[in-house]
Amino acid sequence: MDMGLEDRVIALSLFADDERISNVLHRGQEIPNRVRADAEQILVLQPDLVIASAFNRPETLALLTYGDIPIARLMPPSTLQDVRSSIRQIGSLMGTESRAETLIERLNATLASARSLAEGRSAPRVLFYSASGYTAGTGTLFDELLTIAGGENVASELSLNGHAPISMEQILSADPDVIFTLHYEADAEGREMLDQQPSSLHESAWEKLRAVAASRVYPLNPRHYLSTTHYVADSALAIARHLHGEHQQDD
Image (cartoon, rainbow, N blue to C red; front, side, top):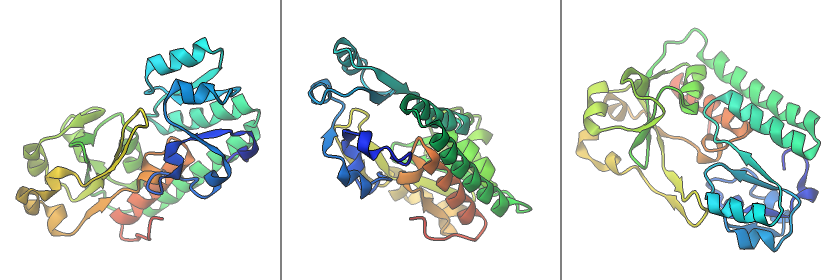
């Protein structure tokens, strides 16, 4: 939609209407149909192309293939280069390569702003903690965003790779300067949406952490952090503002 293709979109995921996660909330109202990750709902619309995530159920995608509907599968990005590749893939599929490059320029400019805030500043030790009790270690998009924003990843210090569970004992031992949380979770099949506080945040042990004592526990905006497009760069900027004392409302 940010490529100006609203008139060619006949359906969106139901997540387009969730204000907690959607970056096209108001513009999406112009698109008439909503679908879950359900082959029957999609087949009846007779689309020329379906853009799907790699985590959609294989049997759903197989049914669409049997219906002779072309499917573009976007891999979950683990790097910013993956995000750029996804934007270019959609641009190529839709014949809007120049618009795709414009969005990539927008992403790069936002990342540059985050780097400039971090320049010459000390690097706080940072922990990412999600509602599911996982953290983001080496080789994750969060790790790359945090590096750009001028922070050190505590999960990497603990030799955690990818998205991995982290225990209370590990967190207490690491004692990060700053904690970023993610309260939003969604069923990958698009069946339900959740918004919850990480359960461990209610444990009294958290009060011993320097980040908690200094009130440096910040929620990430899921509309930006969970995006697989140019909006993810806004998370790097928000992180940099929190880390270096120049935070503005992340809306």
